[in-house]
Length: 534
Image 1 (cartoon, one colour):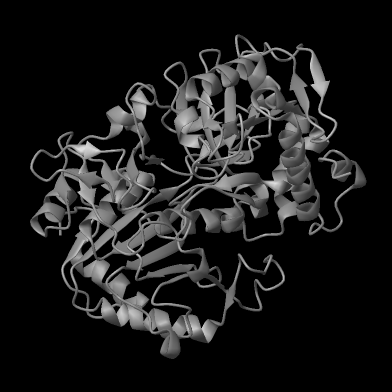
Image 2: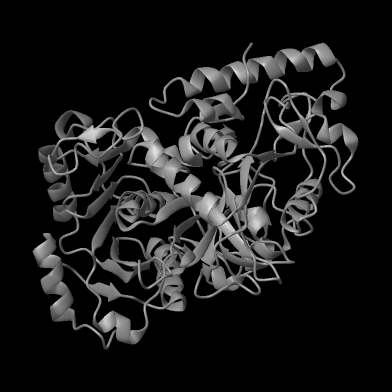
């Protein structure tokens, strides 16, 4: 063990209290180069030509939402929004399977990371992650916030993550749906991840915990990226994976705060993490130079096709998965804001990838409209983000992050409304999806257009623009947005057959209305701000 902060005896004692008794060799908060060295020695990965560590995650190349559970207990039962997303599992089922996991780790070589979630010291949470693979420990070392030597000396984890990709559950014996299980125990403050080597499960499980804890502290937890301009003004980008959160926040003209998870407190905003987890499929340097340059030594690239002889990555090859990912510290991006904190934002962007091809590329939202679209969370699930998704599929993900939101949706929506009202933030809906027709017929909106749209929203040029009201979608669409082609601002003009556009638009409006019926107790004015089905 290489640490002057805690002795091997002290760590072993802590692991024995957890249930790993006796532990094997322990590696504690190793630096990135050492973790890379061990991963290479164990042949768990190899270096690409840029120096990034290439690894494969096996069967699970994306999150497995059907295998995710929250442990149901009397203490938290009344707080959780139970359903198809937040699925309960009995405490005794968790206890039995978690003990099986801890027994599996006895006498094994272990990699332990102690660090933090939350860049604002007033709200950060100390965590511990226990891995059996060096490369997974490198991932958490780069994705979460690393402690100083002084902080490490006093570190006491509030939540512990135990990840064992090499262990499989037995559905008949263990009460799971498959060999995989991601179990969040909010009462015991333990996260157990079994069978899946996909590192995103660790990241998103911690995010789910923060989404449970932060509202209790008056902090609005957000599935969004954030950056800051030369004027010091902060912008937020909400959206699901694949809609552009990471890409658009990594703007050469602005400084990134974080790419995925933030809190909005009375102090301003703060990044939950210390790293980024970018999708890499079809990555091109001319479009995303900052992400391209961040794929270097110390970064981890998952499930990419790499030529073993040359180390060259084929970013266009999706034969393993569409969900190729790269994890790296936010400090790999030039001008990154460290620590990741910012002022109260003046602009919030809701990103959506519309596979129907009918949403305008940008629309301004009223306060009520912002609540409506935040609760709706419309987008298209993109290939590879979850197992079984092979082409874009229209979906509604509440709060632009339903898989990670344990509390009732209106809890988060009310916090959004309170913050945009208090800080007078402008909110825009930006479509990064299709135009000229639906997926398979039309084309993806070029990123250069989206960047220009975002710039117009952030520089204030849209504040006094002339807007038209879309009668069906009930959106305020600018008549002009910089040099953007007119057919993009009016999607109907980009379709070959206007009547086909009208049908598709009416269908999408109906989907919005039908989806919103599930929300109870929402003010009438919020409902009235949504699309019109008739």
